[in-house]
Length: 207
Ligand code: ITT
Image (cartoon, rainbow, N blue to C red):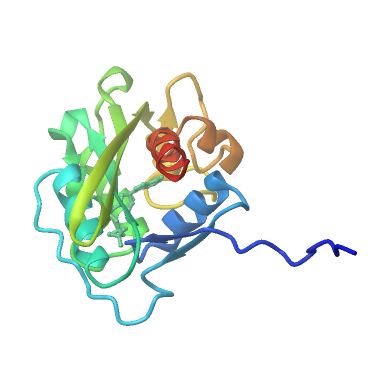
């Protein structure tokens, strides 16, 4: 008689070339329970990749390629940030270190608000951008780009999200990403828009 195999199937794993646990959490939530997402804080002995590029794409590829040389299988990297039109698209690729190397999110948001002080509503346009690069054995295989347009608030609002979320109102909303639920953020965020494309690519590759 045949017995049914009730052992749980081994989940496919995806390694993210990031040390930002907020990104890992968001990507795990968006990919769902069918995939086990890990990152460079969990996988031991992975090198720190210097972000020497001047574009999101360059930095994303640097991280994906650099980490993929040290592991088996594909690696996904996320380079992302906030572009503020009135600041000449700053902080851009410097979003994580706008107020100085190793600074906390609150210092970055305060600096953006300070530099935007007195700028009228119609000139407070901004966007979040996310570029995902996927690499294996040191070679980039694909790159995906996602953007969400919005307006900068004049003060910090909300406890949700991370980074610049409490000062960014996506177009069509009076609330910031810090005030909106993570479910709402994931329906329109730069990261989710890039991740949808990655999911399609990954599914096509596996089939
Ligand atoms: P890794 O390089 O290890 O991935 P990092 O935080 O240094 O981590 P980036 O260089 O891509 O990553 O910088 C991204 C910064 O942009 C992040 O630290 C936030 O300040 C901001 N950012 C990116 N996505 C965001 C989001 O969804 N909400 C708010 N801020 C975001």
